[in-house]
Image 1: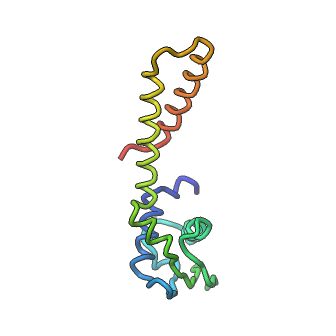
Image 2: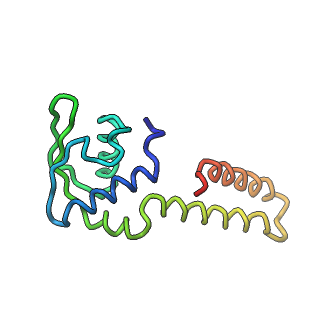
Image 3: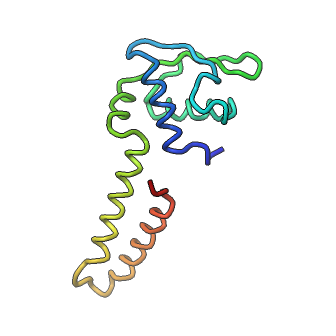
Length: 138
């Protein structure tokens, strides 16, 4: 299930909620109302919504279920709108990737590194490369 929670999918869900729910109000949704609900299980939608709630972007005012479908009353926080305008999850991922690339470049071009620090810098550079390999290219 962890592979399902991607920045793109989280952004789609957040964009949908920001578009549908007026600030200071709430709307009722069923699991099948959400984007990609035809490709995701109701449990996956539930996990995505919980993730947005834990990040302080939405409030889940009520949650219930009827058969195989969940129902929700959801409000959107101002932080969600600000986060969305700032590029959302994909924007945050791209910013992280850019910062890591810059840091790696600086590490690789450091002049006059003391002998005792070379191994530490090599290790740090290797860790940054590992992190970068886990971030998909856009």
